[in-house]
Amino acid sequence: MIAVLINTVIMALASYGITEEFEAKLDAGNLFFTWFFICEMTIKLAAIGVKKYVQDKMNWLDGSIVSLSIMEMVLTAVSGAGGNLSAFKTIRVLRTLRVLRVARLLRGMQSMQVIIAVFVRSASSFAYIMMLLFVFLFIYTLLGMQMFGGKLDYITGKPRDNFDTFLVAFYSSF
Image (cartoon, rainbow, N blue to C red):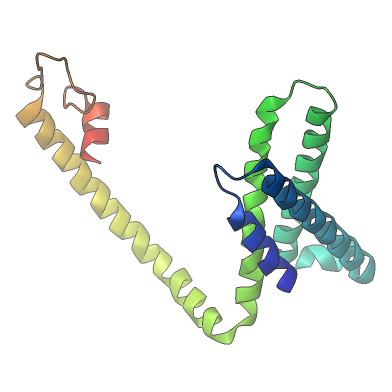
């Protein structure tokens, strides 16, 4: 639990404009936690076996996050070994999925279980609210096309958010 929280803090410290030295320290911390979570998963697999491991859905989450972390390490190593894989630097975004491990901590708290159960029961009602909002958005898109379609031609040109076509009008209304 403490490792998950510390790793989350380390990931939160990464930002634009930090020094290369600080970024190297954050990368070292992330690498440490990657290996820590790999060892944790390996020990757990050895202790309880594969069959019992896959029966728990939280282990699926942990296993997929560890697998993505391993993939990130491999791609980073290949990219650093002279390969032209600079596009794979975006794979670092997958590192943020480690934050989902915090969900495991929430499962242990009784009060959070009640809140999560309420969210699950509310999900179907949320779908109906979203459909209702979509209908209103659709209506206002058609209304905007009727009122403003073809009328937003300025001397400087047509604005990007006009009401000439349905898709652009829908985007503008949204």
